[in-house]
Image 1: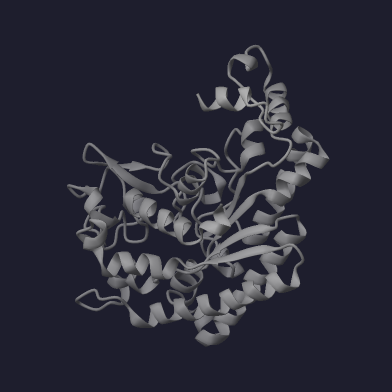
Image 2: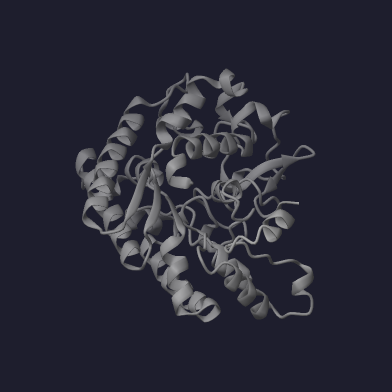
Length: 365
């Protein structure tokens, strides 16, 4: 009905593409028709974050934080991997909420169609961070390498849409950057490599310098509208409660204070970049307060358990230790904020992403 009203209105900007009009056309021709219909403003979602395919591939091989491929749900009492269920990842939820598409595919390890290239992909690698060492420790694709993949993507986009339209898509797309948590939780607090070299304030300064360099390079490659997520309250993640929260598995205050410190410095740097880079629209997204509120007031969100994961014992299982062979699942996953000791459940993500998109609605709209 909406399409019919639009077409009959004779409004000059209304165009229609139907499935019937695509019958018999090749993939390239179909995408050419879509590009023509969307020649005024192209919206896409491009992701550089840890909420994505480990190594950009759809397989269970990464031993690090990785919401695109990890085990993230349950079915019939068994653990089910992200390979099997593709509708519960932050970037997917965001794209779906924005009306772009239901699923943002990984750039690597995926047979991408021209439509995928036109409407947004993810270059992310599980376990990566702004600190180059973070990626090295788990053999993830570094942020620098992800930018190189983006350059490659731009060339493919030009081949499909033409240089003029490709440049428009690049400049008008929404970019999501969600990383930094592993820099603190894994590289600084869990290994000796950086903590012997830097005190905490110095390390945070170094990480933010790396983040700034990444964002400036992304800007020079054509990106303008970039959502940069802050670090979550890592001291309250089930994993950190188990490692450093004592017998009672309390939230680790020092870790949360470090996250707040990093967020403060990063937010100021993002503000500085907006002043110095013409046409840039960088947004610092405060994930800390949103997730912490869900942890501190679980009943308000319908959760009963926020200190343990649904998978296995909920105390130590994550990534490969969360599997159908060695780990059971909780009776009702909807009552759990966390799926494993590091990652929220699908419902947890949906609530968090919706709250963030509402909070920052002028940017996302």
